Length: 275
Image (cartoon, one colour):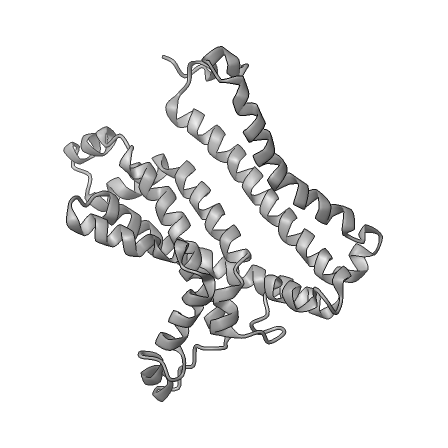
């Protein structure tokens, strides 16, 4: 449907087009410079394979932590009113606005070998700083707010009528959460989880500060790109396009799924669910 039918001012096309070009042109410039003919050979190198596999493994673990920890947090914030709701929400989303290096430094001085908590863990033989665990924690720290914000926003506008009906029928709060609330929130969960995964995949500053950059142990794709940008620009470009394609694929599939799922849940008449 044409946007003008809804009173969309024509002059908005200009800034909208500039905004789109600002995003698209750098991506196109990257694609033009990538050595596509040698791409397969470049991506099979040890440093490429190690960085890619490490990033995927740690991001998947981070995503699991985000879902397990972020879902209860979003539920708690959305169902709380008043002063404490603002406090909890502020701290929950704070990593989104912190400079990544500050986030990494905060994790280091807290969980590092000589950190506030890390010194006691070290005495127990548990080392976190500059390990793969540090990569996972760094990614989780910066990615969780994206999931929490997405889910909490959906919960704020969530129709609790189904929950009340289930409760009056004798369903326990846990049963209502598992069989009613979460299934209805599937689009928000998938959308938020996708953003969190993409954010974790692109994390650089926090993981570099907290985990270092050791090949096969803590060197993720963004770190490898940064280190190789001058010594081996072809490899850096190849890894960059992998990140772009991964992120674009995930966001695209997420958008398709959430749109279709939302239509199913709202039972739009064009799908024949208007009985």
